[in-house]
Amino acid sequence: MNATRGRIVVGVDGSAESRAALGYAVRDAARRSARMEVVSAFDLPPYWAVAYGMREPAESPEELREAFLKETQQLVDAVVADVGPPAGSVPTTVAAVAGHPAQVLVDAAEGADALVIGHRGHGGFPGLALGSVALQCVQHATCPVVVVRAQPLPEER
Image 1: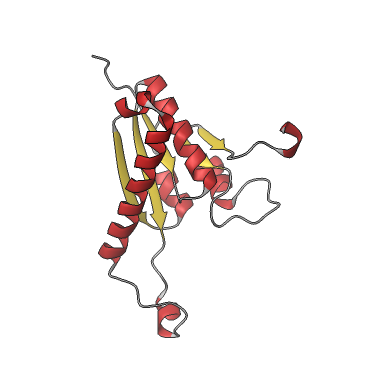
Image 2: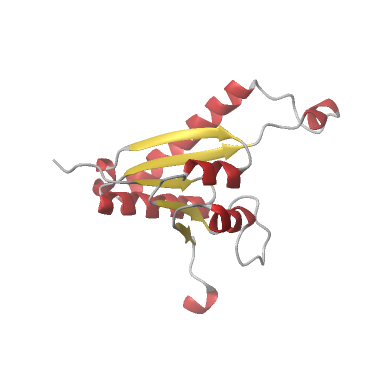
């Protein structure tokens, strides 16, 4: 029996980049015999947006967290199925946490062997060299950060 060594944290938001990051993290965790923690961060809608009709009244914070947790678990299951049999041997936990994505990921990665994130997620601005969440994670995480691209750079094609 191979003992689990280490911990890999991966941030997902459903984007192609986060799917690529999740695939990388699954393979890396299998290679290291590490456990994987999948984290999906979400912001609660601000009160003013609901009060002024800009957003529909949201469910309770608990219901919102459960919805994100379910969606994230489905994404993890799909990506793990795509990656292949070695991924099935990776002990995995999935968490949906309210808060700013960069802070949530930096906090979750405290003491981890690596934090794996996508190059840019849903909030990225085209043309940026690195997404704002990725940049903040690289600057503030206390462990190595792996930034994964979903597609090769134009000069690499």
